[in-house]
Amino acid sequence: MAHFRVWRGDADGGGLEDFRVEVHEGEVVLDIIHRLQATQASDLAVRWNCKAGKCGSCSAEINGRPRLMCMTRMSVFDRTETVTVTPMRAFPVVRDLVTDVSFNYAKAREVPAFVPPAELGPGEYRMQQEDVNRSQEFRKCIECFLCQNTCHVVRDHEENKAAFAGPRFLMRIAELDMHPLDAAPQAGLDRKGTAQDEHGLGYCNITKCCTEVCPENIKITDNALIPLKERVADRKYDPLVWLGNKIRRRGQ
Image (cartoon, rainbow, N blue to C red; front, side, top):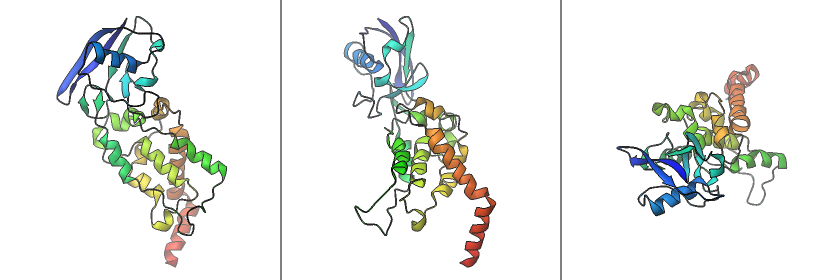
């Protein structure tokens, strides 16, 4: 038997409820939540889908740490330990463990999509394998939004949400900016400029908390955010880049 404390409530408020629940060998936290639904709390609201760590639906906070319930084994806890399950703190509660993550979809729509090169037709795209590998890491994202939830810029400062896209979508901008076939500049899109001016890259202080909670082990900070910050700084402060931009503007 395990002692569980599960947050129950809605947007108007709530609190932790205590449960004693049976645990079997090899089970994960989501199994226990399902058992609670079946035996003690039939109206407990929880979002889940694949139960295989690939859909990102069952994100929650377990003993204060943002995690996927389906990938958190009960064996990691001591038998006498109380397991506390609460909804993601950075997003509004709908009910019980279900949160409203529409903020993330709004931010996703603000990032311009990949711009295909006008001079190439379908089937003519060619990339070096090294460039494919760089982007492929970021494509592993399952959009569980744990990185968004743990980022203190979003989590602790509601007022920042309007100006800050969060690590998931800054990573998306970084991926597109390093894509050798992205024709954004030819289409009048400045990905580095918008990352800083519209999506709040400057708010990120690279604490790596987003990387620490990523269930896909994506090096969000080291491989996406820091290199993007470096490219933005080069563009803005490098004297040779500044001089080149000045000359180009004069030529126009």
